[in-house]
Amino acid sequence: MNEKSKLKLWLPLLFSVMMIIGMVLGYRLRSNTQAVGSMFKFSQKRSPIQEVLDLVMLKYVDKVDSDTLGNEAIQGMLSKLDPHSSFIPANQLGDVNEVLQGNFQGIGIEFQIFQDTVNVLSVLPGGPSEKAGLMVGDKFLKVGDSVVTGKISSDGIRKLLRGPGGSTVNTTLLRNGRVLEARIQRGIIPIPSLEAGYLIAPGTGYMRLNKFSENTYEEFMASLEQLQGLGMQSLILDLRGNGGGILGEAIDIADEFLDGDKLIVYTEGNNSPRIEYRARRKGLFEKGKLILLLDEQSASASEVLAGALQDWDRAEIIGRRSFGKGLVQEQYNLSDGSALRLTVARYFTPSGRSIQKPYDKGIDDYDNDIVNRYHHGELVNADSNKVANGKAYKTNAGKTVYGGGGIMPDVFIAADTTTGLKSLVALFQNNTLSNFTYLYYTTHTGQLNAFKDAAAFSTGFNWSDHDWNDFIAFAAKDSVLLAGMPDSDKAYLSDRMKGLLARYRWRNEGYYRVLNPHDIVVQKALKILNP
Image 1 (cartoon, rainbow, N blue to C red):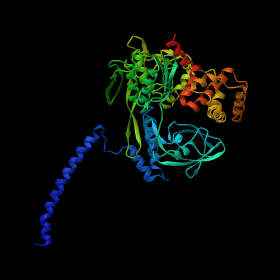
Image 2: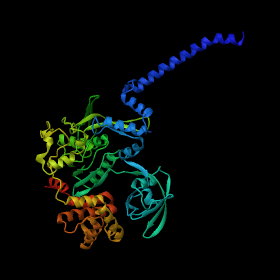
Image 3: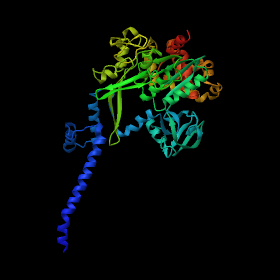
């Protein structure tokens, strides 16, 4: 049989085998696709959005960046849904996730650019920079081969200093007029969410959380156990300015305060069935007196924690109505490395209150809500609070609370609006306060190091008249005139500058040890706990 005849004989069989293999592979691929995609059902029909993008790319008169155009189209679409659904481009995703992860890879310093020079403000104890010998007051001249004096942005220096853990970076520093070389091995740098944890009065603890990251519960528990070991019987938990974060961390903390299997929060949405989160274990602080501090910037997970403790009458809430973010986002990673954070449900407190404030008047009105509260007098007058127009609910003990947005405090404390706003805003915008205190710290290190701890510094250090006159002259260089300012403004600024000095030496806990004796919200909490 010749080759041509053999081919005619085997060709139909070959086609049959290939067809069977194709059918089997196709069936398996279909099954796998259905299994993976069971959560999502996408239409094969091209949407008008895709058609328009394709036509623009093919026909538009000028060259167009498809990524930028697509990103803006997505953001525009999401803005019609709610204020918190968002698209995160691939080049921003790492920075966004970093805050929730609670750490990053770098050298472990805080810095500030002052007079076109990168100055070291603080050095992480035990971190890479401390091991390499860096000190507060050092000035960077070079990072690697890059000269960093002159016009350099904070983002620019951050990119030079950060890098994979274990990698090294060579730096050239200026210290007290001497040029030094330091080789720093980068490591994993924690971003603490617990800013302070100490006994603020005999038997009374104070803790401040600035966010809920992956490490928050662990940090909270370590501080709680330490304070209990020092005899803590009551606790002030400060959540002012805490914009939220990871829900699970807030639930775990609530579990330490609530007994039994009490409901902490539940979520529910049109396409998301009700999911309940309850207390699961015996907590370390189920009986002691507890006060939570909130303000208009306390949001999301902070409100979940506050709402649960208020509904079960476990804590007294002091401050002002919280932000009102009660929408649940899930993050979906996209094929190009970007991500979509899509609102899928709402948070509800145990009594059934929705935490989310209205957003039916548009994103701009929503974003300006706190400013509107100020103009309506809500920040200074509890009676003007609009949330009382919401539906009434009852706590476990029968106390009336309201839905409609945010958590209303049990004890209202007005915001301090007595200070000279214009001059203070200018001082913060120009970094005048931090620049002055930084220079003071670097030139008075011996005097400040004489204080053994932040508590001794808080009671033992005071600004002299000479120091205050120096500050007035320093501020004048930034075109901020402070001469003749009211005593209340002078006291406000003096306290904050003193707190900044303490932060350079004892980090954030030092800052709050200095400010809390003058904080009317904290002092009100202490009076309630210790009448």
